[in-house]
Image 1 (cartoon, helix red, strand yellow):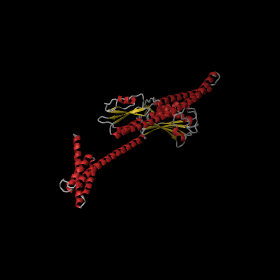
Image 2 (cartoon, rainbow, N blue to C red; image 1 turned 135 degrees about the vertical axis):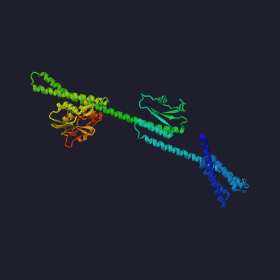
Image 3 (tube, helix red, strand yellow; image 1 turned 135 degrees about the horizontal axis):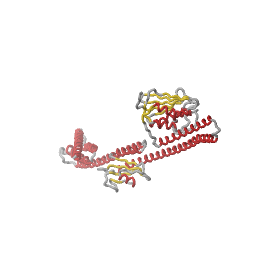
Image 4 (cartoon, rainbow, N blue to C red; image 1 turned 90 degrees about the vertical axis):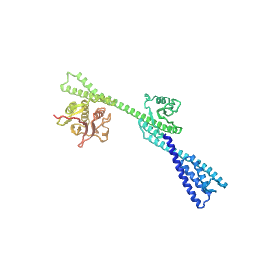
Length: 493
């Protein structure tokens, strides 16, 4: 019913336009006739009316209708005898026939020109869209962006719903069995194709000469992709293929870079471990052997000193192994965080007790709030963070320095500060201090053994518990490591 009334409405509009053109043409011809213009020339007025009719209706049928109506009007009003359809002069008959023939020829040519202009405008519009689509592909990265942009571009190009399926992993299959068949066979199937022609979807593979990357699904219910649209779609598919190839090359490049970096880190780790294990193990072995060979003839002070060295080296080895194990867990995503309410003073005292044997000729000071504060943290891991920071200060900041562990409450958090009055941090190395295997954090400090994982582990543990850690030089010299941890609860006793 809707189509019927639509046709009727178009017909009425065309009749109104034709009537208006006929009226104005006739009025103009009557005016010119009153001025003494020859009747043959008045046919040109009606010829212009025919041309305007073509432009107004865009129909060859209406143009022919206008030509006949204008011819009969000319005959009735301007040929002798006037106000009749009879022609006494043969010249008027010939002029009328020629007028109809010329009008028909001009109408045909004008309509063809209009169609060619419409085709040219449409091609220009499509070309502009294709260029715009191609420009948009340049800024895409990642399969999800490529998929979403391809769907939107194709839907805007053909005006129908489009689904794009991209296969990132050859081991997976599409949930749509038709799409999986199209991908495997690398040929179109579905609506209008040889394979599965009764399906409402048209499945087109995204492929080049060597590989298929995915499938495009066109919803063809009540509609068919014509030959011209297929050309446009093929153009977009070629652009999709290029951007997918670019994405794969980028991923391969990144994977190669990561692999090279992994191998470099592995080599650095092995080299560092080999060096740092050999030194303390040699000391332990030499001290133990010397004690064994001279146990009965050595004085107590010498024995105590050598046993102290053995304990120090053993503790350092244990700390290094713990750091290596935690670093492995962090990189594999297996670092378990078991947060619970811990007493701040207990955390600080435990860290101080563990580093007490490493203080040497340095001085350690601690400042904590007078109130008993509870905060959510994995106590074991956070103690290791404080131990690593204090141990770094003792080993790298110089000789006879003062190390301060200060804890204050700021707003809804706690601020832990480990500072010293030593040589401080080199400005060009502050940004690298938390990197893996970075062991020369201080410009003039004691570059002792260490695989450079302590600060990396500190950063990972702190951030995994919702905190932040930063490093900078203090206003009065020396290095400052600042940790900010969230405070969820407190208790006053």
